[in-house]
Amino acid sequence: MSSRDNHRDSFKELVGALTKLPGVGPKTAQRYAFHLLHVDRSIAQDLSDSIINALIKNQ
Image 1 (cartoon, rainbow, N blue to C red):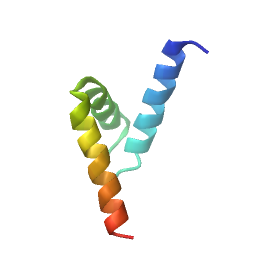
Image 2 (spheres, one colour; image 1 turned 45 degrees about the vertical axis):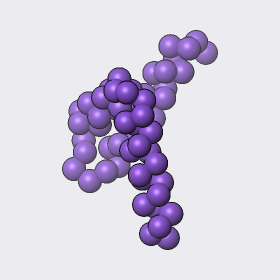
Image 3 (cartoon, rainbow, N blue to C red; image 1 turned 45 degrees about the horizontal axis):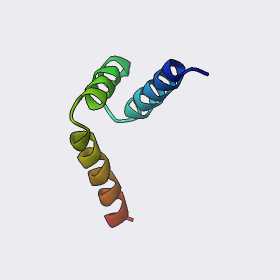
């Protein structure tokens, strides 16, 4: 499997996860995924950390 295939698979996985959010369809999920992969890495990391922290605190 090539690096390009790995990137495509991880993009599809991210889109699939985002479509599980209420009100987020495939096109919106693709836009969110594209944005997250092209913004400063710290922004995506902050979002990830916030989600994890909220899940931990609300167990």
